[in-house]
Image 1 (tube, rainbow, N blue to C red):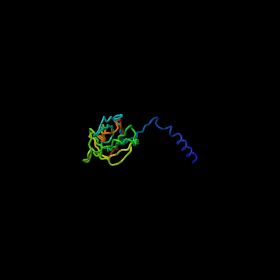
Image 2 (image 1 turned 30 degrees about the vertical axis):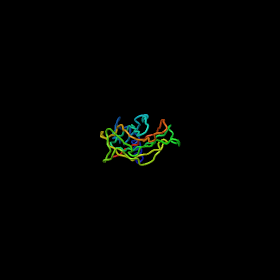
Image 3 (image 1 turned 135 degrees about the vertical axis):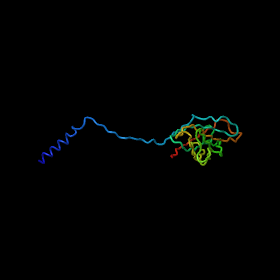
Image 4 (image 1 turned 120 degrees about the vertical axis):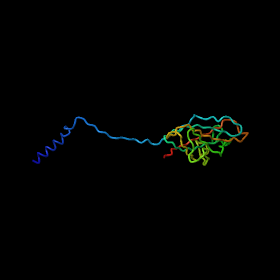
Length: 184
């Protein structure tokens, strides 16, 4: 008898699937969370700073920021300008960055938070692509756009050419823009 019940249980278990409905379905909820992200890109291939004899040189350097958060932080860096794109030439001193004022950041649809100024001071030495220069502190900006920061940013950087006998020719350097997301 035990053997018969055991055999019936095995047969029922083995063929029990055959007694299921011919079709079925199930539903499951799925979800995904969109993380904060940002991209930064140059707004041009290069910026021509014009011609100078003696005096201030002002560069308006465009960058593009696209972030899916409304609050971001910026800092900048700029190198001195070197004759012939040669930062190690000992014969011709570079055209130096004008400090103060620092670097000015302008966003058409955003402003610095907490009463901060959009001009940030230089606070450290740096090297950009082999060119010595200066870097700034960070400043927080908030967008007036709907929970995003997607704008063209202009960085204003100044240099000062003070030598009336500076050898003529092209002097060049680099400007760097850094940005990061501020999470709520």
